Image (cartoon, rainbow, N blue to C red):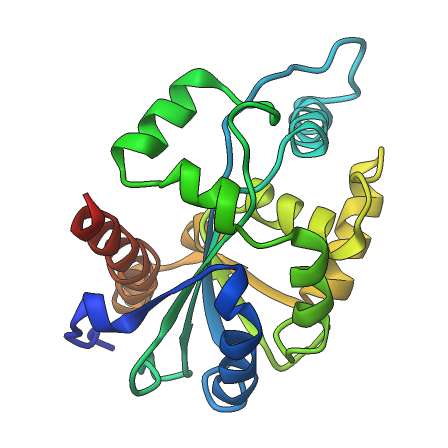
Amino acid sequence: MPAATVDHSQRICEVWANNLDEELKRIRHVIRKYNYIAMDTEFPGVVARPIGEFRSNADYQYQLLRCNVDLLKIIQLGLTFMNEQGEYPPGTSTWQFNFKFNLTEDMYAQDSIELLTTSGIQFKKHEDEGIETLYFAELLMTSGVVLCEGVKWLSFHSGYDFGYLIKILSNANLPEEEVDFFEILRLFFPVIYDVKYLMKSFSKNDLPMMKWLLLELTSSHMNQIHQIRISKR
């Protein structure tokens, strides 16, 4: 399944507070035929580490995720839509949602902010024109994107990505126990394909599919995001 050749500048739609309603309406139509979604988020790094005793390394990693997601705010969410054949919708295929973020008031890791600034993130615009997460959650809940078994989410090592989305959708901090986190995850996102874990189960005969998945998640989606940022600088 070769990735389609696309004009990245035309494929990506930047979404701010002033065009959020309009673009979510478009997504409601797109999701009907293009129900595979590649996701990526930008967030302000890691600023805290949990202390105490942990049952396992997995428990520690979840508590690390939980304390940082609870403390920090999401900066961007990128969603790329495709169908089962890996084909994009005509016109826009990636929506990049830009959320309110204030470098004076909100917590962040300095090295992460410097990296994001270098990559083209416009923090002043996020402060002035960014999307309110509560309103975004209201629209997303009725968009057909979440809470739907027919929607397939594609990601790569996506714990933090889904952590921030769950925080937004539930308007609450993450649960203390990882088992409860996964229960909420299955509610909002019934079908998730995480390529990092899928790769472990691929045989040599599956290499073409593995290559396609990696292209979609790393080359196609992320390269589109990268290209649009470079064009702003």
